[in-house]
Image (cartoon, rainbow, N blue to C red):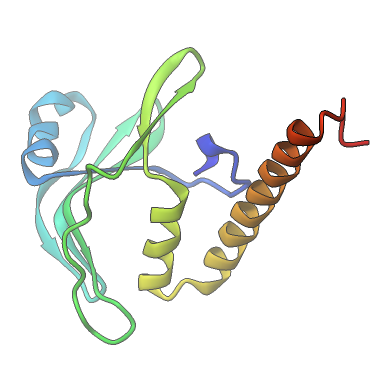
Length: 143
């Protein structure tokens, strides 16, 4: 989300994919492996999960990631086809759309983070609306 402009503290990088992609990371990123990708289930999550340390940064890989919601029901595996291509530092990177992130935070019951992200999305939509209105009216600026 930080790559999309959301101001947040970052402790790690999460990579979400399908089962085969997650398991392939064991070989592709073998030199960085700290916890092998395998099926794991906790009280709140289940996935093909593993950890890597790349240039001092913790990278967590999750395949077929599912979340247990606040009602105790497991979600469908995270849909990795719902992604957005952005350019960052001259490289193209796929990220999870912010709207999808909002849905994930809601499923996890992480309401403080949800509110923060929702506020960002609302501001972004309002700015787009204002810019669209300026273009239609032919005004040179917002001020």
